[in-house]
Image 1 (cartoon, rainbow, N blue to C red):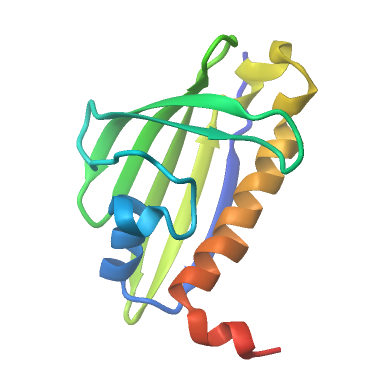
Image 2 (cartoon, rainbow, N blue to C red; image 1 turned 180 degrees about the vertical axis):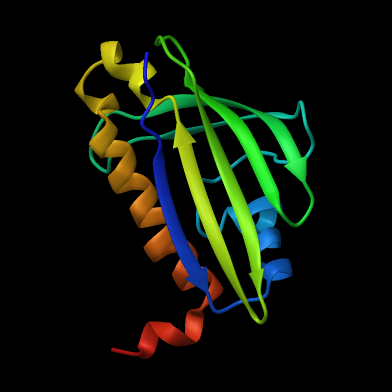
Length: 148
């Protein structure tokens, strides 16, 4: 099976330490992502959350951290309870002085194709676009919310 990963990049007007904390500190994650019960940026750590399209079916996500390079990269597996398929989500950070380039890559979403229309690639693209370009941006750059 060929995989055509989802890749979303954005430069945030925030230092790398702040972006790293936003994607690895459970108290920070809850403010822009899903309300995780617990989260530790450690290889082998497992976490779950419930999510789905607003007003649609909600699914139990099962994740396990597979790679952590402090301040640079966080990767975890992503699958759904009771459904076939497995994918991987990676957040990579690149220092750009007082700004940070975040590169999100989600590979393997095609493995969910047999699970139904809720698992179509476009839904993942829309979800990650929202989380990176709106939710995380507004969390990291609150002053810019008032700009046109």
